[in-house]
Length: 386
Image 1 (cartoon, one colour):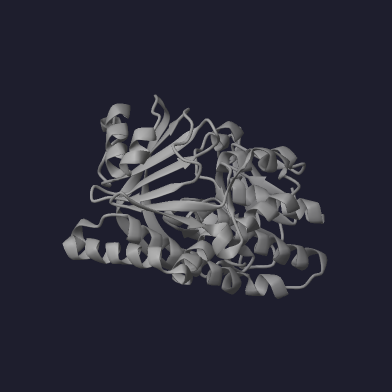
Image 2 (cartoon, rainbow, N blue to C red):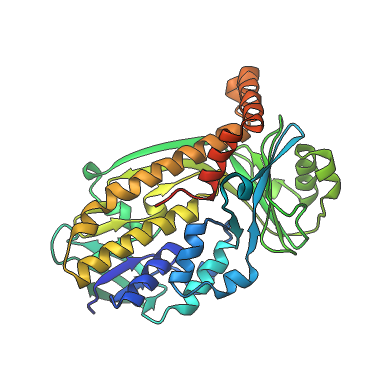
């Protein structure tokens, strides 16, 4: 087989890139090592910036998103029960939309007309430092080869794309946080119309949602915690302790339909171009979920990469691909900074002691009293320009 672009990974980033190329008339094949059902079974957050909403429309995949997505004009922050709402619409005239990443993936799957190959095992990348790269994979016991002009690595943090880069060509920056998020999904109405981010001496908590009837809640836990040690009752009791009493009283509980623990890390790889191979999304960077940046950052990456690959294929110009890495890394580091800041404000860090918590409280009080500080948070949360 031959195509213009091989995309490794059929998550939202890979699917979006494939769709944008497809609409521009650039041939692309997506390779995914898992099945479609497995991909759709991944439970992920879904706070969409305006740029991601616009990109879904550009991909002609936004109809259901607009029909079912929940517009949020702000968020609530809480510190030891003291509450403050940030009104994004008033502060900067923008908003976000809550729409699950699983639904984004489903919508992009449904509009794609070009070839996607699932259950592609043992994917290997070859000669991407030459003008004739190619990719091999195994399916049903047979090895297949795809020759191409470019390869896009959208296969996540543990994927083969970044691992294929020679170690000496790659610089990585990483921080592992000493805690994770225990999340629970429940078929109950959300406790509030907007997200609630809560700092408490027992740890961070987040009240989120997927729809008017399905909620997602999180509590900060130690990295050595095990999901099986957390009964639903224990989770609900702990969540209530970390929320404002009024919010805790309004909380509607029920049996969990999904429960998992996600570790938190900050990670960036540089550069993001290696000859004809380009990294995007979680293959290039990871942010802690506190700032709601992961999906949006991946979508921003592939929007830039799509334009560069379209230009390279149709206009035979390398201008876009030559600046891809430097351009997206500027936005990546700004998102990393914001996600780190949100994480630092809202979580407990035992090693910082009482002094650290007083600094966090001072930061919270400053934020509540400064419209400029609130505008800065709102600007970052709703999405910086690409």
